[in-house]
Amino acid sequence: MDENFDGNLFERGSDGYEEARLGAVFNALVPDRFPDLIVLAESEADCVEAVRLANSRNVQISVRSGGHSWAANHVRDGGILLDLSGLDGVKIDSARMSAAAQPGCKGNVLDLALEEQDLFFPVGHCPGVAIGGYLLQGGFGWNGRVHGPACMSVEAVDVVTPAGELVRADADRNPDLYWAARGSGPGFFGVITRYHLKLYERPPVIANGVVSYPLDLLEEVFTWAHEIGPDVPRYMELMVFTHRDPDGEPEVVVTGPVLAPGEDEAREALALLETCPVYDQAKVAAPNVPARLADLFAGVHLSYPDDHRYAVDNMWTSAPVAELLPGIRAIAESLPGAPSHMLWMNWGASPARPDMAYSLEDETYIALYAVWEDPAEDERNIGWATGHMKSMEDMATGIQLADENLGRRPASFVADENLGRLDRLRAEADPEGRFREWMGRP
Image (cartoon, rainbow, N blue to C red; front, side):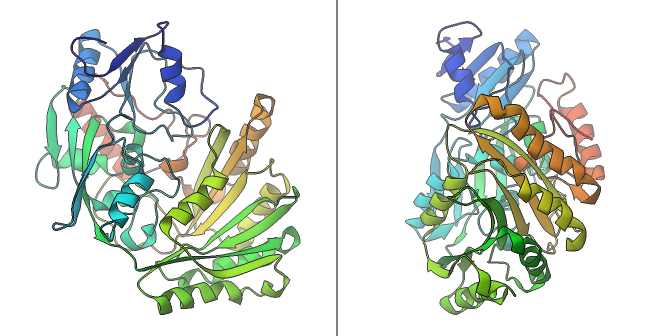
């Protein structure tokens, strides 16, 4: 342990280095990239010291909060990897409907603390996702169609700048940093040590519905899902999956988690699942099941298990469903083994958003997740996710950074004018290029 750090430092080749490098990534498909130094921060002061060390060594720095970046953007060759997973504290002020949370705080842990006080924040869908990277890239989470991307509920951030200074950024102080911190993702030029969050009253009714169909009804189900999009209330997340059932056969599954203002609203929303024209041919139908958010987390975890290899890619689109269906059919017919899957979500027409780096979303979100354990399947599964999204990219308006695959397939992730502003702000704030950018960009 260095005398200037509260946490641990691991030089490449030292005892504990490889454990720290592998532990910095949720995806078991850890890239062959090796930082020169890994800093496991235990305090805010460590973050300041790490940036100052990068400056003194004239090397670049990358930052990890929870490691759920599928592409492991934060693991680079050379330089410093600053690991913030140990900074996981949170303080809730129920009277002010606010919370101050460190970047390593996991969303599902934050939610349990909020549940005790009947409060809510739109944390990520997957358990184990720390808020740091999640909020930087936008934040596609529970009830996000109501509250918007979670970064909209960030009121301020504490940031270590490239100069090694700890500052507060909000709408009045350092507003350019505040603008960039909401949507720039792994291209952000600073270390956020604390998020100041706006909280909400907890939705009083949480429930879900699940209906599965045989693959030969794929076109009918997706066409229906697209057509009812405008009728889906914003407190419902209508999603359609293609995956393999317990017998290994591809199937189509519709889910409709609701975080609703009341029982009547939940019941009315879930009744939409029964309007599918082939509902009477469903394999399994459970259109209304009461739940806690912890139950929804557990269900999501089945699709994203620990200690597996992942290849992921995605697209936003407003293309007509008839044009999307051939690609969706090809995806479903070539599915890797379970729990690999394709996700379709009716995001809908977006309300007005504040001015922030986050600036790209569309009517429909489609994402591919290849999930496996055997390294011998790496090439095939990476090709499945990347190849299918590449074949459909002429219908895409861009991607979401949560499921980015920029190193293998560059694509737009913010509006062009916002990317230009990010580049200008970076040049001003980080002229030495101390902080890494995205691995790939259009």
